[in-house]
Length: 565
Image 1 (spheres, one colour):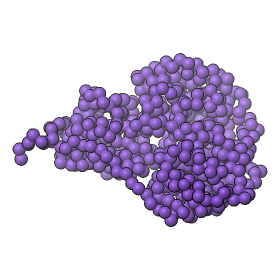
Image 2: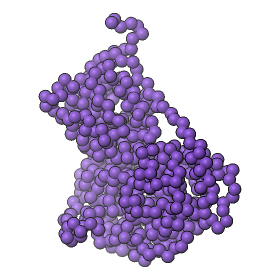
Image 3: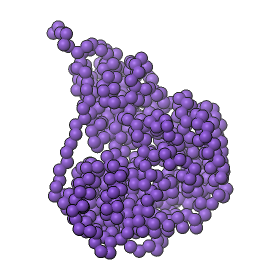
Image 4: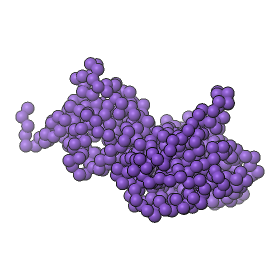
């Protein structure tokens, strides 16, 4: 067939893919150049609609894109070579999947003509099916338009998630005719009138309501509307790891972040609740202490992911909807209901009592003192006092993160970036890099432990190469504490403690081009952070020496609460 004047232009697959990303509003590509990716690398370098950031390891690539989105940036694309590059990225892709973060992951797949012959980096494309929302493997030009459009729209359609586009290098390099790819994610309307009426009746009659906020509240919820609903109910509030920050934690209604480290008083409040309204909560094992936390007498579960309903906790009313629309409908329904029942509790008073009792436990344990070595809880409280409220904080995984759930107050969701139930180490520093790209006007701080840092430390060089003002706070107890302090260590290792010795982080950071210093007191930490924020002169690392023998966050939270509700 002879092309006509109306035929689409002939362009390379790389140019057409680039245009599709731009049409979807993507302006950041994170990658690491390889032989197979060079056609797209070259296109991004030649044109100026998309920024390119080169990480130092493929594992960090999706973590950077994840942190960028979590801190309020737009959706980013990621690019790796097939095989080793793709498999290194699987950790971050699975984290994004569990956290409902949309990413467009492009893998320069092996040539379909060579499959089965043993080409470099060959691996079956379906290897990645379980770490992304959808996995598209494109083999021919005729498949290109539909796969790229459908893939990007799938990533952007709630519940969002990462999508993998496997595009062979020959297709990225080849010129072919294909209709321009325009991205238009579908929208959905959620009904369920009877469910809303039942939920409204339960909530209107509730005397001891608790609102539980999860990842869905972070993704689609309006914090102001959620707070107004909480005030209408006069409820107490708990959050999951991903819900942390959706509700301001300086509000007296906040009880804490759920998990094994939830203060005992907060657990008693959950047990006493007659209705728990769970907004976008997944009820995963990490944030429910392996499903041991109580969820009140009646449960209203709002989630966009119907596969999560009645899996961990049986709901009395289930509403399949995004949190924003559900909150609006519940508020409208409650306006027509009678005033709250006599004898209903005061949510603010409940939260005040719970937090006061927990703070007393911290104080009595000496964890807030400026001793040497200092305790992680005291360091986190010091950081909260010295960091501006608009600071974006990212966290890695480790014992320090569990302390942060209760002792580092957060007021906005985009100022606290943390992984959810996947809980894989090595995310903190690359996430901070992504956050700084998204929020260059704000201070950005990465919180990490010595164990987690060893899994992503090379990305300090990325921050230095791009001259990013990212401050890393490294909680260094010279111990793999998440294991050595685990209750299972005695059961399985008969008291054996695995040897762990931390390297000279200051020397390594300076070798990567970062300013660095060690502190051993809370006052020293405060001074060092103040100075780093004032300099705004590239990446810095503060090596904070904390007590290797301090108790865990879970053990301190497990006290005999005297609260009655």
